[in-house]
Image 1 (spheres, one colour):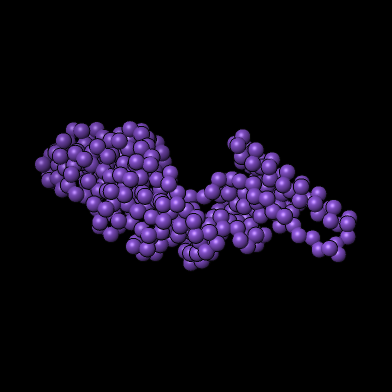
Image 2 (image 1 turned 90 degrees about the horizontal axis):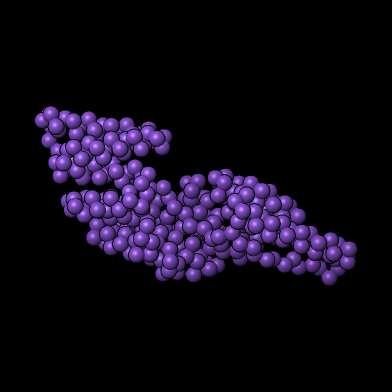
Length: 308
């Protein structure tokens, strides 16, 4: 029996922020036009501020409308496009989000965070090559961007270039001292290479930064499972489900530990709970997989097969 879990890619992005931009006017510009431009810029910045307030109030759709209006009033206001991109991404609108970040880079070609988030959006859309190019530009503009280094690491993970990914995640971890995600991803990279001791160390460091990091506790359990340290594996899975009682995969994994420990009644109880939780969450594939494991437990109980 094997445990597999495909973790959803976690992408770091900067928080919503107002970034001011100034429009340079030619000395030959008529006074009336200059005044109109200043008024449009002030109105656009006011709309961005309004959008930020709406985000804080949980009014995502209204914020998107405000950021769009700001971008319309002043297409050269990079903050309007950038915050629109973040809001659209929060709403799950990936392509419009990428388009907004691209507009932010056109409005301000030195806007490192816009390039970093554009790269992240493209990565999430599985456009690996363009994602790498934009992230490289972000790092060129701001070598100290932990966001860009982290997202570059995710690109390298997709390319299975695990050594380079570890380097990028380590740079991100050093630049973002409170973020546990880069350390967790280092553990993932080591795990892919079969370097289980190094993976365990990285997961432990991630937990030091965030003791309630469910996936890190689970991954510690997973590494211990692969190493045959069943009690330690069970502790990791239990900790993950204590933090998040709806983390069905943790119960599933604990059930497999109980099978290997020949504690079949407990294995059946926990696997049933995992199956029902998967079903309630609409995860039919894993509910079916768990049901198959339950059938194997029953066969072991009847003496028709041996635990693996």
